[in-house]
Image 1 (cartoon, rainbow, N blue to C red):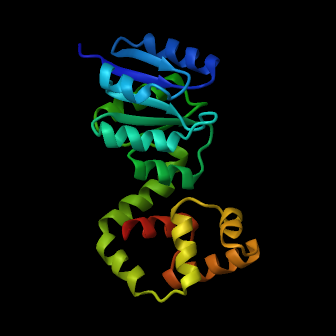
Image 2 (image 1 turned 60 degrees about the vertical axis):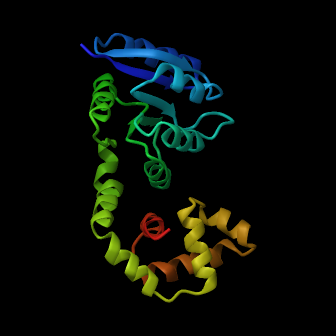
Length: 216
């Protein structure tokens, strides 16, 4: 039997050891390394050649998103799964765009954890059931209609400030962060976001981010 080679990156020692112990009980899994930080991960991927990399979304003092981007740019065939307690939709969007193949909630059952790894290793995408009805369906829908949506956005007339805010939303900034970056009040930001949603005939900030990413 060809085993699934797994690298685990989790900075909480108890969680890391617990997940490692669970995975090692599976006859078709081979945990080839478990790290508490990402310092040597890229070099180790080249050396160990994993099939799947499990990454904690909230690594302390480290940028999990940048790590995912680096892994996928350097080793596009390596599947990446992100673990988190309850990831927000904007985080999910950024990680999906970076190339993540799956998400696992940290309170998921052992069966969900192991089945997610197997499914992702087989080339499929996996999100927790509480999220699949929203973001992933949107991404698939927009992917099919990419060209028409791109033309729609390009035809919408927006002010320079609204265009700036669309870009910042696409970069994952919250209203408070946008207000600070642009030197305006959060209420002004909310007003601009409301206008943008109306002009683009959208309902949520996530949809704005998806549309903006399509035409980048």
